[in-house]
Image (tube, rainbow, N blue to C red; front, side):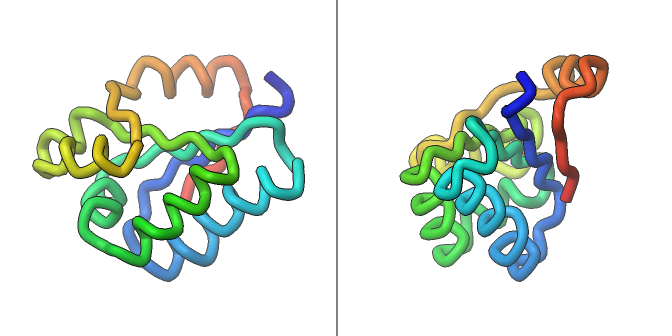
Length: 112
């Protein structure tokens, strides 16, 4: 889909998370820059989201704006944060195959 954006979030720096990933995702939906935005938590951001109250609040605001969040299940399980992410309303699923499809289909993806 031309108006679908994926943000592959792999950097657990709280400032980058708040000032790029979550700010851009939220504003993209609020300003109709994209019809759909999905943030994929891969690796350390799963732990950050599970443990950082400020990041959790920004995820909540982004979700209210229409941003979809999904975390890599393998990462979440290995970091023991699957239940915390699910409680935040973040989907948890295996992403390897789907990410490969997104890349092969030349869909819009930003990696942070």
